[in-house]
Length: 259
Length: 322
Ligand SMILES: Cc1cc2nc3c(=O)[nH]c(=O)nc-3n(C[C@H](O)[C@H](O)[C@H](O)COP(=O)(O)OP(=O)(O)OC[C@H]3O[C@@H](n4cnc5c(N)ncnc54)[C@H](O)[C@@H]3O)c2cc1C
Ligand SMILES: Cc1cc2nc3c(=O)[nH]c(=O)nc-3n(C[C@H](O)[C@H](O)[C@H](O)COP(=O)(O)O)c2cc1C
View 1 (cartoon, each protein chain N blue to C red):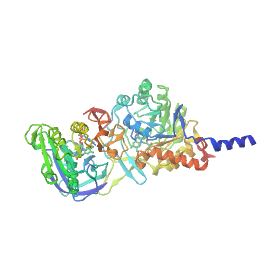
View 2 (spheres, rainbow over the protein chains, first blue to last red; view 1 turned 135 degrees about the vertical axis):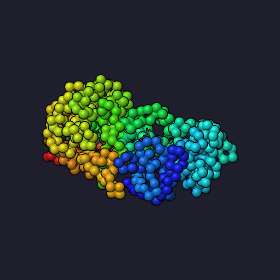
View 3 (cartoon, chains in turn red, brown; view 1 turned 90 degrees about the vertical axis):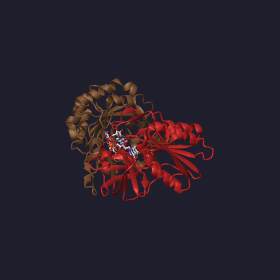
View 4 (cartoon, chains in turn green, orange; view 1 turned 180 degrees about the vertical axis):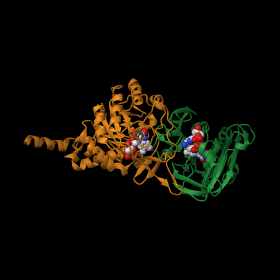
């Protein structure tokens, strides 16, 4: 367990806050931390930046609401980096990132690394409505182009991310060599299927209920793999081969629920 | 005399090294059993542990009603071990039956159960008895010994000799499945508990559960790390205690003993067998050595036995008593 101080807190949207720490971490985009609030609980959070170490947190319950109360100077404790991150192959000239909700945060870290390695990076960010969009401004700075879609058409193209993804996958001038997705599982399922159809390699960052983060307790089982240790990033072909991908998740007790 | 000598020589030369085992009549490719609570939430998880080399597998312990378990952190690493307080999270007996129905692999499936008292244990056993064909389970394990869950195991006195006997007897009256009584290395009277469990109808003893409870405090925050504050110790740090308990129980009972606690290498498994275990339970090694732990442990056992001319596991079991 490591402890650092909060350096900065910023509102990303009505629900999401970004918390910057006064430390950095050697880690890869797609890896995550187990973030601990003593006396409250510990939850998995994607790494949104390595230097300074940053997380972006949606306020959805017990631990995340405590994280939203942190101020500059507050202490934050965490274990990590954990899991396996995104893999970028030498020779890829252009990649496409597809994100929804707080899933955009780890993609920002990936975009930053890819761009600094001279890989042209495109991003599509989806949200329900304009005020829910996160990381748009930051992505503009580290990508060649960023597209926004909203369900209600209040910003960017109207509809879900697939509107733009479908168009970009068949773009003759700069067809992406690979696609990276993180967000709601139904969205990732649609992206994975389309990439399969176009024979474009695709990696997904998946989410399951995690407890230990060490590949021991079995809570985050996905078709015999531990998402915390074998993932959270999976090759889309491997994910599509797992029956429960896009279908159901387990809760804290291990019971299955439809997604 | 010459004849015997010749036969022994032939054995030495042509008899292949055999580390297979029978668990209540079912073949195991090796004596290694996945301990309860490690990767045992999902059927697919147990299938992949079996695929990765376990001789038999055990489910996460299940209760009558669903349980969310303790708040996270539920596991923290410590010197040569893990400290855990998962708190028996499970979807309840009906959820577990639907999860594990149709176990198809050859490796035996052991279903672990926990109850607040002998009545709950008996109810769970009755449900498993009704579903044993579709579940295809080989045995029921009674987790009498978790050191960190109020109302269950050590915190409810279930690993004490009299309680272990009472619970085992109640389960025996509900099922014909073999019963494994899983005892605690933390509770005095473990030898007596093993004897009484055998008398009440247990078919094997598993010694044992995690040790403790223990605690780790994060000094930067001045708070216990685990959500439940305290938890059970497992891994190499507890092996000498588990080995001693197995050694004493081996002398006291006539049923097989599963030696669990800190088995991390093939040499550790052999040490357990020399103490008197017929099988070795393996849990934390999945963390320390990764999902390939069982293959590695089996390989090390084979190499060690081959180098010293051992052909069968029974030549090792209990030798430390001679
Ligand atoms: C690899 C990974 C990376 C993640 N990255 C981020 C991130 O960058 N930003 C972010 O805001 N969230 C992220 N999450 C989700 C986040 O961990 C939790 O969903 C959330 O913080 C809930 O905690 P809570 O105590 O506030 O909610 P609770 O009050 O516990 O419950 C609210 C809901 O959150 C979900 N949830 C709760 N605990 C977990 C858990 N341990 N694992 C998965 N889902 C849970 C449940 O569906 C529950 O219904 C990530 C999850 C995973 C698995
Ligand atoms: C994360 C974790 C969860 C466990 N859950 C259970 C459980 O549900 N039921 C049980 O009988 N034992 C449980 N145990 C104890 C193990 O089955 C085993 O007895 C103990 O860890 C010692 O073996 P080891 O050193 O090989 O891990 C658990 C252990 C760990 C580490």
